[in-house]
Image (cartoon, rainbow, N blue to C red; front, side):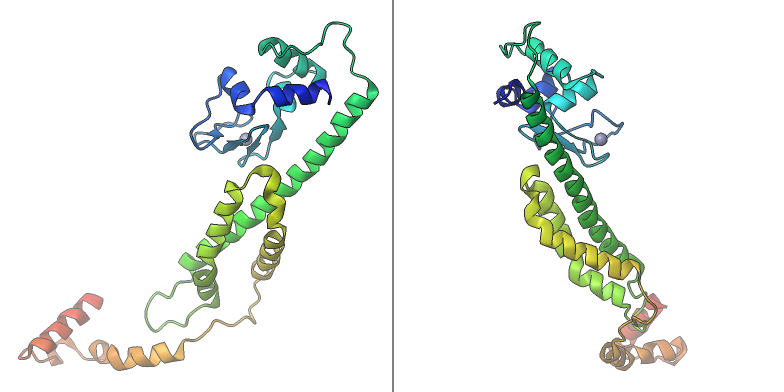
Length: 246
Ligand SMILES: [Zn+2]
């Protein structure tokens, strides 16, 4: 275990952030220290933070290095040691050997690769949800006689599911999100299909609904108001209803 690991073990991310004046709310979110925002989009985990807005991901060492604009990871470690009295033996002669540093760098690279995957995974799931939301609004039939657009139907089927998965994903600890890999792949496939939406994918025509609508509603629309007799309550109601729709 290197001095870097010891520091990370001893110092929870949240404590460090709060000591440096970054408040973390009950949901474990804070305003991103690396981009300007009004609503918190930065999630704080026990040993790292991840911003859903700009994609920055840091452990306590790299956060300190970047936040305080320090030159090296070692400078960051020294600062944390001083600020939080971690008791690491980092006197002037401390010079981490090559193995210690390369071990740390190797793990950090792995984490960065994971963070890259995670960032694109989150974006994929978010994009699918947004696309479904857009389809549901944009392609909804405007009146009972419209053909039903297949994008609207697809959105009706998948919007809730997409939202559910996205929420589950965000509530899963950062390190455990690989479990959504299959879901992310299928979301990618889905997006590719729909973003290259082809004209030959024809809107679904809801013939039965159209037929029912013509039996129930059409007479009201085709008759002129004056032709609707006023002497029965039923007809008056129909007239009022036709007037409302028209
Ligand atoms: Zn950010």
